[in-house]
Image (cartoon, rainbow, N blue to C red):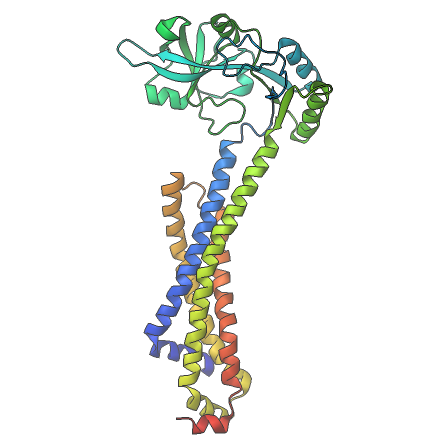
Length: 395
């Protein structure tokens, strides 16, 4: 088509001006797509980190109530505890799901002669419940009371291997544990954060800290559709007189986190959209300049029979070329931008090439093309509606 060729010719004649207009589109597309990729990658990263705790209901003593009893802390991080009687009630109402009692404290550890003491979280869990909680990276689950598991981060940071020995307490007054297994990295967790912790058996914990109560109970729900029902059943049973426990549904917490990340992604993408709108104003300005410079040319076209829609299409072609070329370049650079941002902020690019991330590049490109066409409509309409006689007289 002749008007398509004229549109391309005009872009070539004013190449610098057209390139600067396209640069604005490129920046807008990169901003929108890169921020979208980052936001989606963050959601996927957090989702993977929380995948092991999304099936849990966590019961803890209520800070404002009796929480099952006072005293008997024995090294617990809180004076409020869940008694054995409370645990049996929780276990009964949550059946057939698994209810796992958890003890926890922090204490000083020594990993060998000549090594400095360190402070770490220590959990006490029944050996029978450990396979329901943890996946091992190496070794085996603790069977004897003197055995323990350690988190992968703890093992790497302190050069701990299966068979290593850990002395617990000031001057080793709590005894020595032998590492039987290393727990696979779990990431962020609401139930038991083991990556930098030590997991001992419940019997060892009871003997070392003189404990006969629990800090929390974690219910592993077999059917995710039953989480709400399990949560409500526990609350009804335990808080029927006074509010003695707090019950947290980890799935609800995860949904709140994902919603927050979604809002952040929308916000940062909107910032990229502002740069796109600025680029659109630049396109509008350039197209208006093009119309002004070519008034006489438009008058000649109209006088030899060119229709208004043909003149209008010529200017829309120009806007479309600027939008398409700028958006394609921006889309390619968005991959590089997304790769760089993911590497710097998430230390991984495994979520870059998933469909839910790549779709943000498409969104950015489509938005860029649409903005260019919208900003080209008024200049094209103005050119098409010029009076041919007045246009020929224009100097």
